[in-house]
Structures are given as C-alpha cells and as structure tokens.
Length: 224
Image (tube, rainbow, N blue to C red; front, side, top):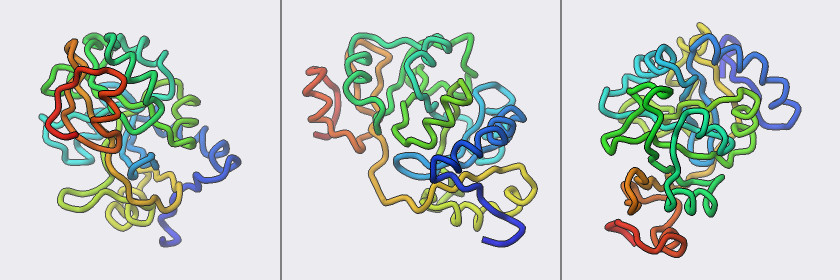
C-alpha cells in the first residue's frame, strides 16, 4: 500500500466499530464499498437505483448479470418484500448465516429491477462474516455484492489486491476499502433458485447438493 491510498482497518472489534460511521456515510453517498466476505472480497453499495447504477458503472458489469444482496437478518427480507416459500424457509433455517445464496421472488416495488436475475428473483445471502455482518446490522439495510476484481482477474482475497487494481478510485474516495486481512481460498457460495416450489441448484458451491437434499428432499441439480 502507498501513503496516498490506504484501506480502512476492519479486523479487530475496535477497528470494526470505529469504521462504521464513515462507512455508513459512504454508503449513504451512493459510493462503492469494498469489503471482506466468507469467500472473497466484494464490491457493493446501497440498494437503491442510483447506488446500483454506480456499482454497474464501476464494475463494468453487463446489464444481464445482476448483483446479489447481503443481509444480516431475516427481517431485512420482509422490508424488501422478498418471500421465502416453504423450501426456501427450510434452507435458510438450516444454512443461514452461511455460504448459501437463495434466489427469492418478490421485491417488485422495493428492489431495483437491475438486481433481478433471469430466474425472475433476487439473489440473497445472509453473510456469516462477522465484521461485514456487523456493518450491515449497523447500516440497517442490505448491501449489494459482487466480486472485487476486474474482468479476467481472479476475485481479490486481500485489500492490497484491490488497491493495486483500483488505485485511482481508492485515492479519490470513490471507493472505500475495508481491510479484513488476507482471506483463505474457498469455494463460492452455492446458489439455489427458490422462485418455484421445487428448489433448483443453479451454481454448485460450498454447500453440497447432498447436504441440501438432506433438508428439502426434492432438489433439481446436475451435481451431487
């Protein structure tokens, strides 16, 4: 890291708590935030149209590839009018917080359409990362999430990698980077489409299909 570009320490309880006011102010200003998760570092922001558009521009994301939402409590789903059908409720009760992303119906009036996937739902995960979960609780609303990397580059596993790729954005204040340390390599979250009665695995990941079947039984997937 250079003297001009520094990430915000986001490791100890004291660091996390002291970072919250300025981080929330950054989110309210509709700017992009980089933060650690249970898998890799992510980029995200507030869940409103202007913030989502800023994240799309920042990441250079194709319009047909929506972001997911990170939550830190099931009450956040209700505020966005997202719905858990019986299968989704069982999966959430068993695997949340954890590396399981559920694609949920609803949210037509409260979630920007750019976040809606080809399945017709909104992808949501209750992150188990303690620091990021604490941030979301303090903020009071979900934040968007996409991997922190440029196209063709592996997702960042450290704040230093993000600074190296996004130096100017970080130096200008357009990007705020929370440094949660070096993350260990891990599988991405499993993504399950719960927009219909029968859940369907649309991306295998950290939670095995066999574990999902143990709690919901009937599951559509190609991988076990």
